[in-house]
Image 1 (cartoon, rainbow, N blue to C red):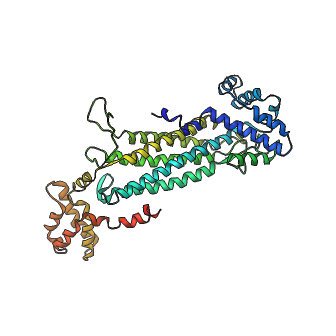
Image 2: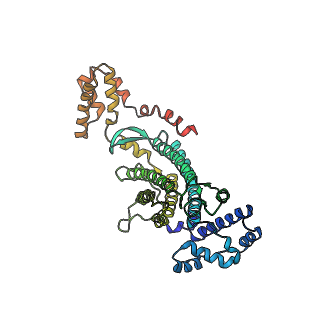
Image 3: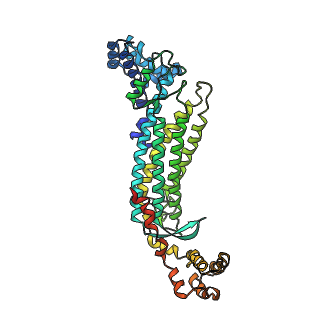
Length: 433
């Protein structure tokens, strides 16, 4: 299912064409910087800019011999440029272009994901307002607790999405650094001004200190941020999956005309999108763990991180791009069944109001322990007998009736009163922006 997304803007960021184009841009910018410092002739730089090209297929062929991707790239570019190619990659190490390019790719990918998070936030806000007063039962441990609203579920996810927007903005800022500092980061053969020039033109900042590589805690922060975002998407997905269960059916993924749910059972309407998102979140979490393993490298650098990053960075970005696309559509088209919510709310025949009765009894002057015992005794009988309901049991309990009037008990069983502070919650959340 993911293949159809590889030609999108996100997919192109991780293609060889984009990578080599960025490598070439960095190399040319470094030459421009040196020309501005009168280290090389400006005329040679113009030749380089005019002639510099590459052929992806040819680079891969050369790499078969060199076993080194950057050397293969430089060899191919030199074939197009000619003698002036001697200025290319002067004083640089492979990681200068590899790591600066990877930062640029991650920054570019992060900005796409950030845009999608804003879209998801807007969708969640719209649905939360739509169902602000749509009453449903709240569940703790999977068991009915007290009434809440479907809008509050959306608002909860909306708030988490806002936090994830802040997280990825910070992660983008963290990864937006480059380096053109030479073999072990000491600028031994190249002025720091070259790095400053290149990074400014690339929309990056120079890494204040580097070795042969940009330090991998930056990459780990980025990928763990993606994992946290994926966990949010999984959290939403699991809630939808539970709500779509046949015996619950309070919400349901949109089921399009002609869609099939099962090869064996024609009646099936399965939460396949939520399940897909749940599964893919596991991959992004695993990738995040690998990124943390990449932080510790030998001395000024080894390449134990390199092969891992070639998989986990593009995969995580493409996966989350896909998951966010799915989730935006899922939220926008999610079907809500308010009538089923009321039906389910009444399944326990008033038990969701047990705490209200408890506190009312306490307000009459008895201890919390005694009040709890009185209400729990009634509640346990209702669990055992489907013909009983909490209101009748309370009215039939002599000890309770000595403390409460029948009118007071009647007033307890009002669903709307359970949401009396919903406006307050929305005012400090969804309606604040």
